[in-house]
Image 1 (spheres, rainbow, N blue to C red):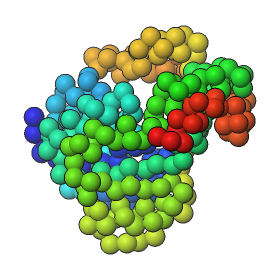
Image 2: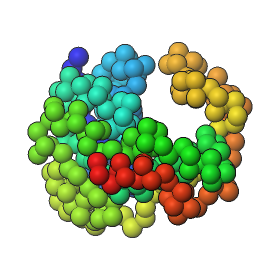
Image 3: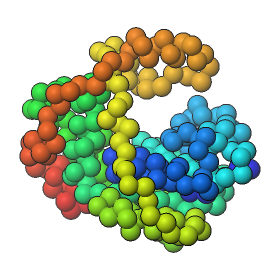
Image 4: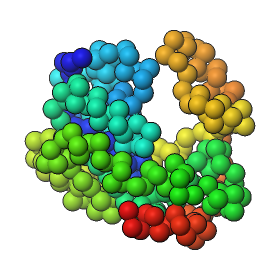
Length: 260
C-alpha cells in the first residue's frame, strides 16, 4: 500500500494533552489545508484502513496543494499504537510525528472526567475514582513509555517532536520548524472540543461497552444522523471536580504512573 497525498505532520497523541489546541493553531495557518478531518483515525481503525490510501487522502483534505495534517490521538492509545505505528511505516509516510504529553496522573484524571461528562462513567465521585485502577484504560493510556514503544522501534527518534502541554509556546516553535515553516506567534485561543461533545444515553453506553464504538462504513449518512439523535444527549454538567478525582485516585495507580 502506498500513499500519494501524504500528511506533512502527524500529531499522534496523547489524548487530553492539548492536541485539539495544536490542531486549531495549525489549521489556522494558510499553508495548511482547512478541509481535512481533525482526527482521521485512518491508521487506527480497521474499517477506514481497508478503504485504502484514497480514503486517507480524502480525510486529510488532499487536492488543494496545501500541507496536510493528521491529528489523531488514537495513534498512541494502548489499543491502537502497535497497528498505527506499523501502518505509518507501511505507507512510508515521510512526516514528523508530534507527541503532546502532560503529567501522567493529570492526564488520566482528565481522561476519566471526560468520560464522566459523556455519560460513560457514573457521576458519583467514589464510582468514578474506582475506574482509575492500574489496569484501567485511563491509567494504561498514561503509561507513555509503553504507548510510545512501537513508534520508537520503527522510527528514528529525530523524526519525533515531543511537546509538554505546560509549554505549548516552545512546542509550537518546534512543530513549525519540523514542517519547514518560519516562526510566527500562535493564535491566542486554546480549544477543547471535548467540552462540547454530547453525552451517551444509557443505550449508547451499553453499545460502546460491548465494542460498538462506531457504525460500520456501509451505514448511510442519514441513518448515522438519526442514530446520533437517539443515542446522544447533553453533556453531564455535574461531573466531580478534577481535584476531587485526583485525590481519590487509588495509590497503586498513582505509584505506577509516578515510576513508569
